[in-house]
Length: 93
Image (cartoon, rainbow, N blue to C red; front, side):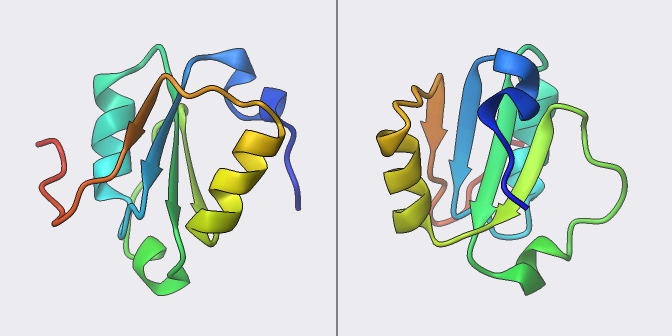
């Protein structure tokens, strides 16, 4: 189901964790930036499903192709507070 931008984070500054893998980096970003809303995007539903436990309220994990996701953000004029791409995955610990 498609969600409106206001439904994700209520207009809070947006952080995109591109190719987030399991979402562990996204969880850390959300915990370290409680005033922002974090979207972790990965194309693998298997990897995204490995993040266990309750997710922070300011985090949404999404399965999507990054090229399509970036294009949709650009088409809608969405401005990011921060754009993260941790590769190889030295996510913020």
